[in-house]
Length: 150
Image (cartoon, rainbow, N blue to C red; front, top):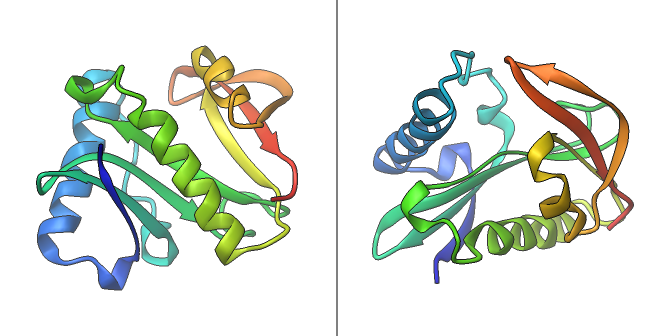
């Protein structure tokens, strides 16, 4: 079971920053074969959810305040679990932890995500509902999903 922590960017030490970018590159760039601009300026104002097992970052998500990605919603993005740790419910754990953090930080706010389409049922289990039509984001099919006010 990972130990989860929530940190602002300026609270991350350099090893944690390196681990975050290494994990995101390993999954989103290498594994998914997707060239995109990961460092988008939003990390500086985000809350970062770190999931560590024995000192190793195995899961990650970032929480963005309303107005950063979506004008009317808080957002969770860059949700990732290292491949060798999948199938152990860590993805569900980090989503639950992120939702709880949002309820504490931004009570009463809706949460919007841009989910890879094949994960719709996964996010449904956490109260997210599909909104709108599917679209391509960085060449990968996505759907917008909303979880009504926390």
